[in-house]
Image (cartoon, rainbow, N blue to C red; front, side, top):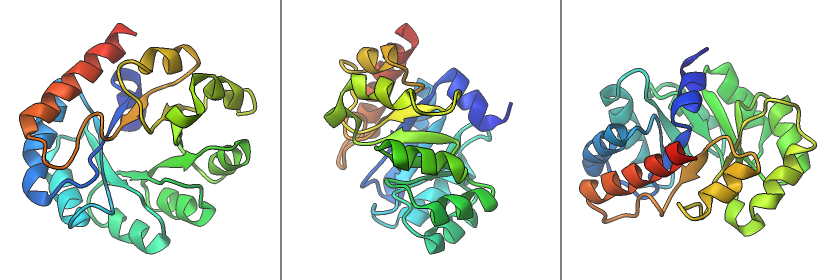
Length: 207
């Protein structure tokens, strides 16, 4: 069982820190880790994203997996592989990006919505599928799409997920969740983010 499998077994929640700055990243990460988060991504459309990603990779212990979100092309994959980070999270299903990430030793968490996208992501090396935008589709969609996927494929709903919607998605087969604005928004203090993180972790554990 590798580090990603361990993280998914223990606390399979992904922190999506869109808009965070390098000056904020370490205090926020410390709060997330104290709450139990072990999967942290900085979307590449954040300010000076690679500075934050490199700082995270250097700061976090080995059991906490860090990386980039909104990875869109192979050039970004190459830079991410040099940053010390491990996670590669995409909003879409691009076979070239998936294969490049896997070849570089990154862990691909691949954004998809339709069955065709999901099956393509799996065929090209996705370790988990980020079902996005999940809240627009509702929990029943998760059950529907799982029916056509190979057994054991992890589904991580992302997009509008909060403590109220977690139970419904979990009951229909969610293996974890990704949290964006319900966890972090630009301008939030590290203490606010830590409080949100603790609430989400407690909700997951109660499930």
